[in-house]
Length: 278
Image (cartoon, rainbow, N blue to C red; front, side):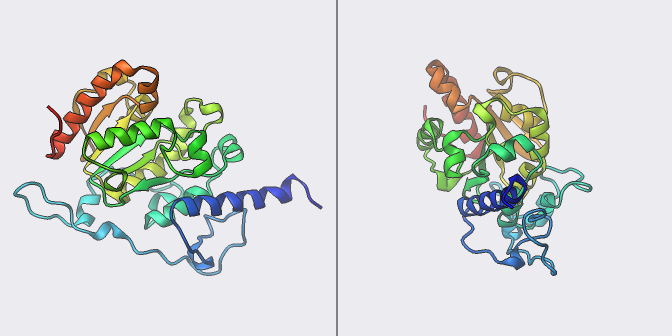
């Protein structure tokens, strides 16, 4: 009998496959799906999933005149926290596995039942710089990629002004699901998604993070300070240098803030050793 209970697993599976495709996963077999990932959607595999190759064993990019440090040693310093007791996704061995875990997430019932698909991240998985936004919007929810709407077009222009492109950086959000009506993420939603965010950044291992807007900055830096107080300086947070600035969507509504954002970008690029502008 077709009812809401029989349709729900099919819808969840469709979301999972769409999100995996958007995250760049081209093929996946039963051995690539953990029992935790497909719990409630597909029967559990009798064997453990084989971990995909992990790119985090690369050496840390050396600072000027410095020696390379193995990434495994560096990872212990980046975003340190006790991950015991969290969902298995918090220790996913690769971005591909983590993207699959995100696609199957049902922790936030409202988001899980209203999203088209999850929006994981995009860009260079070995980037020195990550841009962290708030949450997917309607365009992102439809396409499965962060910052693809008008705000994303402005972000592309900001990157170009810094002599960067999307292939040079990694872009992600505090949330991986669109809040209905593009409302501000609730604290519980951000909390549920935080292990995914932290693990995603642990796997990318950026040296710099640029927080776009108050929601991103406050969640990442664990502060209630306004974006006006947080911008204009470099914060050191768990071994990562962080610059906060206005969200591109805010700039579309308040063009006068573009000058301040450009100053923040100049500060960021100077900290990275690649100054721009005058």
